[in-house]
Length: 439
Figure 1 (cartoon, rainbow, N blue to C red):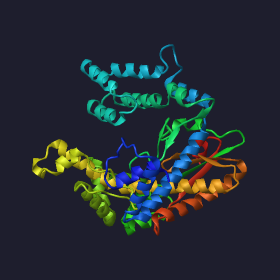
Figure 2 (cartoon, one colour):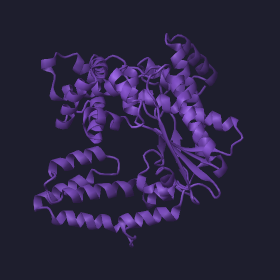
Figure 3 (cartoon, rainbow, N blue to C red):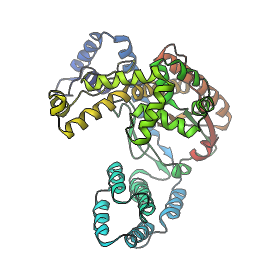
Figure 4 (cartoon, helix red, strand yellow):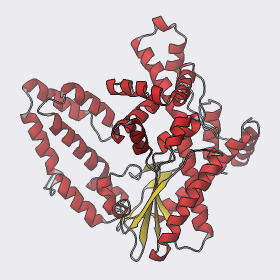
């Protein structure tokens, strides 16, 4: 049992704030953790969650120790293509060039606003930057496209530029640090940029000489998990297809992209003009699924704890929510109403996100067990939400791809039980991640 992850999971389950000052010795902490596990009514699911977290902790340690093949020359070529060749004192000349073009497109007052906007962007505050930029430069403004281009380039070089490579890449090997249960929903996180590597840079992730990368991705896990949890017969029926968006599009006479936007807007409770229309359409198509989401939102607004099927628990409400809940509706401030709304959205999406994390973590554990117990010269090198990258020999590619299709079904039965939802997985192989992912 991984003690640290188990304690974190139990604290969340009981709505407790972790005690970071504890000085209890390890044997006593293990004894207390086992005692707390036995006292939980849904002990079977929570014990399975504990085993999954522990298996994933071992897997992460192995992946951290092994590193990932990285083509430094290709990385430099891609950065030059995007940001031009470095000059003295300016590693990314195109960024300055786009900035100058933006200034030319603005009037004097807007120039000062642009300078202020740039100041809040450090490669992390992406949402704040995007929201603020939209209020200053709408789609009709001559600077709109330039600002979007600057943001995309700035994000790339801030997170994966030359400075990043100096810290995380050594001798054509990338050394990110994977962290299982890195988010409240149970998803992994990482230091070093392993989560969310841009598609542009995937050619840099390469296999060792005489080896091949096998790539796999669960198809559309969000709406499929929504179908499983809500038991909506209409939505479950669409999950029989490999591409449920296309299947629903054909049934409803709509474009695939519109169906996709509607489903994701419903899960995330999107209140934009497009999102509101999507919610109305989803209530017509999938009434049971929408009632399920509405019940979760109501739980969140009441301040109740929301859990996944195995018992992963949404973080308890903070003091600002409690203060808002204690006041009558008509006496709440705008900020209090916003706090309440955000809590409702969190509760609405959490069980789906947590169940997806349980499924993918179970698949990661199944992959590790299969590879560890076999004599294949194979190992999992990268795990990014619903994507897996495995390094193996050319002779083992077919066997690994076959195993992945089998193991995803094993993982689904293990954490979800009986389900009428299909869980297709897309696989491919190649010398680099980008090549494997094109299959």
